Amino acid sequence: MSCLRKVDAVTVTANEPSSIDPAALAATIEEQGYAIIPDAIDHDFCDALIDEIKRIEHDFKIADGVNDFEGFHTKRIFNVLTKSPLFGDAAIHPRVLPVVEAVLDTGLLLSGITSMNIGPDETPQLLHADDGMITLPRPHPATMVTTLWALSEFREENGATRIVAGSHKWPNVLKPGQAHESIAAEMPKGGVVVLHASTWHGGGANVTDQRRFGMSVQYVAGWCRQQQNLMLGLAPALVATFPTRLQELIGYSMYRNVMGHVDRQHPAVLLGGQSAPEMVWDKLSGPQAARPDRG
Ligand SMILES: O=C(O)CCC(=O)C(=O)O
Image 1 (spheres, helix red, strand yellow):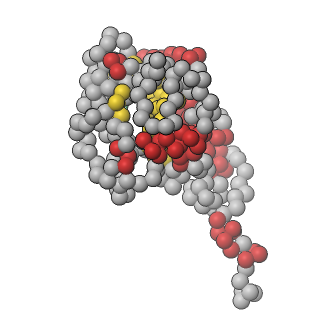
Image 2 (cartoon, helix red, strand yellow):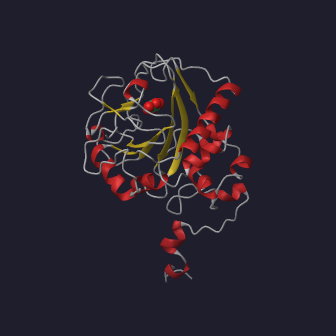
Image 3 (cartoon, helix red, strand yellow):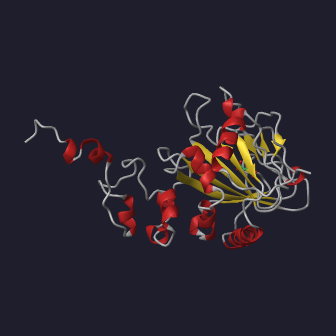
């Protein structure tokens, strides 16, 4: 029996061993606004992340939210990379990142990582689109992708994310919190749902006596602004210890050989790296392309 509620042709069920096909999943996301990878993450990694979340919540005295959006029984940790390098492994996970790259292209940036630990008695989160503040006419291609990780099982009763399938194609936005028919993205522990950020969704109500451990890893196209300011929020000395791909996703990279440069140098020089970037201007009008009328 499948535990997933899916509506399209590229349905992946919890009983099938999933081989990840990023292009097919990207097509599903384009079509229905989301795709579920039921066995994306192994359980040991989920458990390690939950342990870190519990440790950080304790050490940093993380309190419950104070509004309907963040919830009154939900703990969120932001800027998690300053608190544990384990979350960096999540951002570059080989079974998730390629799917996001297939949607946004490989020049994408990490937009932020947030844990969401939903406690008993939590009410439904306001439905929203993560790109709701973007002023592009809708619908538009994905500029942002949200991945929601089920570190513990996501069930309708314990607050599985609610999704308004197909809402990324709507020309108008709902008012934040406006009610609408939605489905519960039920997933086994280790599942990940990948969302086009125009898709309306929200954490569900938790009517059980157990906590629901989830995590959001968000990405934006390389020409967009990140939601969490990782370049200011993470000390360069810390980032220098991270894998190169994670450094690139944080912002130590250039999009299309120009966006993100620092005084005509690759931003990785600020981490002690080499700088020999070929700038887009070189490509457009390098020595070979010199105008004959110039001496
Ligand atoms: O916790 C969830 O399932 C979703 C959370 C979410 O969408 C958010 O906080 O923006």
